[in-house]
Length: 413
Ligand SMILES: Cc1ncc(COP(=O)(O)O)c(C=O)c1O
Image (tube, rainbow, N blue to C red):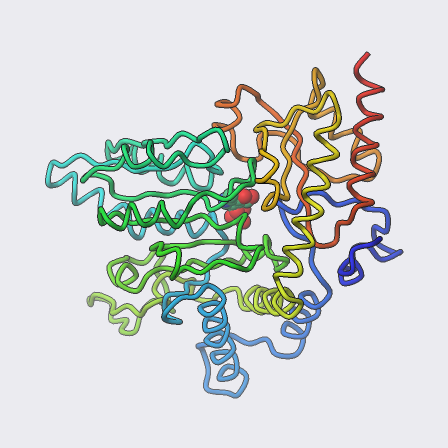
């Protein structure tokens, strides 16, 4: 049976890619017509620059952006709309936090001749390693890495042992883009909160479940990209707790950040706009809001149940292949949250496997998926990653499995 939502995605229309078996949603989700239409409508019929004029279009746009902020605040369970910062995506947000928040902390500690450390996990995407690594190098701070336990999630005891009074920040992913299972973020934040340590959660891979609540997670910062949520590229969100936002300095400076602009005066800066671009990605924000409406209108519970069942089926079928080697063996109960499988086929080059899958019309990721250090830790340099979206169905999984069977037949000689 075809996914009930497949028809919402024009990419599968006869004049586009009707036979595409897209198994790369962890890289980016395809775009539903609703999102593309909303963006088209905005760009064709409503576009102007929001804070610039007094004419009706601009007044409407200011409302539109503030309503979007409100929607995002309630989507994430934030207490105030002003805790929502529009970014260009997760990578942009994490770099912004490094520069706007962490760097001043490291400078201060260095001036006071105090050591600093930053804590990340072994399962981070490079977007959540490199900004911290760069600052650590620049200011002589230590980058501490939390090991994973046998289930592929952060080991809480080892995590706790890494924290001390010199820990300036903990930055971890809610869900790894390689292993796919959720980290115990609530406990991680609680442990850090008790020690007054700021937590940054990279939500790029978990936002799609539409069940994040920053209030119950009690994190300080939560970031994600719209394109991992069936929205457009180049747009994302950072939830930043109000008191933290207050002390952050602008990442980039220019028009929208400031209220007074005399050349010899310090700028008075508005929150949260001080952390945004002068002209934000309005059409991207329109697409993001539409994506949230699209997913929540259909009941995210229904979508999640659908994907959980499909994921369980995928893992079950893959695990039956005698030459299937998952990067991280997932326990049966964990399959529930897990729409990603990263693997190698025994003795085969992953690039070759992905090439043969492409020949069969199956789109997957191959390489280290921007998680080179995790691959190194697991003793491999490359893997195939398949990841499911709401347009996939059982037929796609069957197609994948039979293509892997033929790939193995062809290559393992
Ligand atoms: C866990 C994780 N963090 C960060 C990113 C970076 O997201 P973006 O490229 O949208 O900035 C990704 C993208 O794959 C990701 O999976």
